[in-house]
View 1 (cartoon, helix red, strand yellow):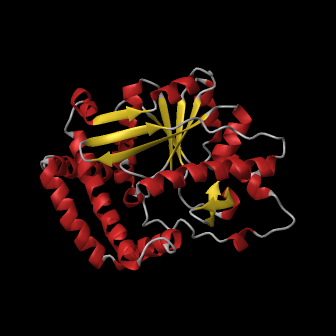
View 2: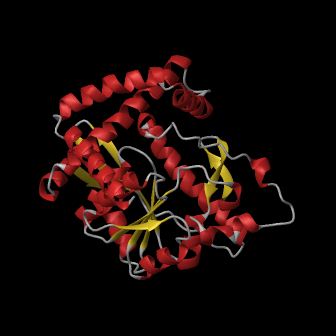
Length: 313
């Protein structure tokens, strides 16, 4: 079984590197064509994307605009695949020439506090290449991720994400390892834009609707005092641009439940603002509002605000 896993991993890597040999302009054109075909035939994810877009922009955009955004989202996801392969075929020196960084002073000020940094990010642009940015600013980085079910594919992405020195922290029972990383003064990145089960999060506003959002970052910020700095990597015509936003002040009044909700709402608002700037580059095919508030109803327990978070972020 282990040998088969290695063979499949090598096959996956070879396929990505093969796609990376396609010239960038041709790759973008191919992604455009394939994305449109996928949009037509993948009815399940087309419906999810369009339902999400209607939910978020239904009172602001017309039906044809929603459809155009959803189709462009499929195209961008195909571009991401080609870009991963492209990045594998370049050494670090050549790769970084395609990236620019805004807001360096924001991340520098956060590091100077000496408590490590919690990096708030999302599945926007090409999030898989964020580790390149960490290498460019020369700060140690750990990324909290959920391991993929297919082990050869998971091995490939672990190697992709760690090739410039970043570390992976498996999401399940990650709390202690995150504390250790922050204690060493490192940056820990958490993707905060996906749906979680009711016992892992709190319901706060996101794109105009209540969404169950992980409580983990708020709990960590309150517990450690580590500054929270947003960072997103977006695709532009000439390459990629990373933007470090200003530190998000942590609200800590001593009311645990209220503080977790308030801080998590702040994080959602920052992610939402960036999505509105680049609506075609967010991961709309994910069921962000899947968990409903009524699923969390338990008037006799605060478990979803306290016990569950340290076990799973």
